[in-house]
Length: 189
Image (cartoon, rainbow, N blue to C red; front, side):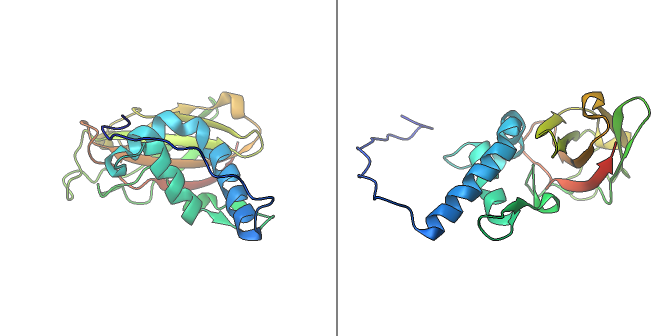
């Protein structure tokens, strides 16, 4: 049984001698995105859970981002950081959030509270993620502040003297509704 469904496995068919060029391209996309998203597994299992039917949230996030956030031609594939979504859903997001690096080694996110617009509530929880391409490291947190706070920060001292990509989104208190995450830009620390 897997996810409440009876499954049976058979032996895989024998592999052909080589992969086609399209198969090699798809395999390269999978390797690139898996390496990028794997550290976010606990976050993605929550922020994509509402869309994941008979699969994990991580698998749904992986599928979306492989299709939408990889650019370039094989073998020169790259991640388009502005197209990455670390959360997906129809909960209204805040408008034009910004992130700035503080002297204390924190990345500070600011936004305008838009509670009571659609399903947005004052106590929706902010989630943020920060990625350092140079180190291949993520910092993230799922419960930093409420939507009504208008600000939150995440400690990123260990990423100092690097450039980071940052994302923010919101999730309801019960975890059932999520916003599409927003890319808040590339920041030089």
